[in-house]
Image (cartoon, rainbow, N blue to C red; front, side, top):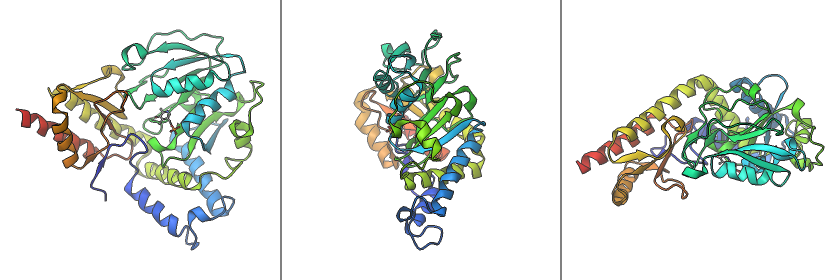
Length: 357
Ligand SMILES: *Cc1c(COP(=O)(O)O)cnc(C)c1O
């Protein structure tokens, strides 16, 4: 068992059991005397892995009929472009909410296909809140938003209600809580925040919504290509898909999304209570929009930085330095991070307060 409290923002902590199982499969998969990563992706053994991964996604999120689950490559960063290619007619208009770095990148990619109209933004306050009360143009092909803003530490607590189709980048909070998949035409997420290692991206797409743009979509960027081949149009990223499957199985075995939602809330309550209680720290985001996954905070007196940094490092805490665009600290509390790690961080914050007493 690792003694490090791993708060990395991504790639991030995975369950120890999953890492153990994955390391075994690298040496000898399914008692084949072959490695998982040296067998054909068309072999029965790997096809079973892919099918299991896809069916676990459906089961855990309650994916309804009419939706397809794909494990592809390119990261959520390619997802920005694929979303636009598949849902925005060339020269057409789509609505975007700009809540930070990732949302901005999605907007940039959509502007290659048509016009991404930014209907709401929190850029005026360095993305420290979630915009509310905006109108959504009825003639937009869709509304795109980022459910959890990994870098700034804000999260949509309620999803926008929209008459136009909803497309969402859920990279950093998928599987952290219950969602209603049928509200969306497209959900996508890079694996490395809550599901597995970097190298695969999950897409959940409403099949009947595809094929309506008239765009000449390159084969690899066309969801229909991958649907027709069950995520096996080309060689899939076998190891990331396998580890994602193990992580989803771990989630299911422990009680699924309903269980983890409760745990995640406990972790978030523990850290935010301390940030609010401890006079040496303050949060940097609007309280009602605080992310359950990524808690951002700063020291009230920056001259204490070195001292505090030494203290948490000595306590075996890793990965809480804030993103360079925000500074301060960011505690990323993805599914596999135990409550005890958050408690260890809270202990350090309290010890730090006493040392200043
Ligand atoms: C990390 C992240 C991305 C980028 O994912 P890649 O897989 O590195 O392309 C996009 N969106 C969000 C919300 C993220 O957290």
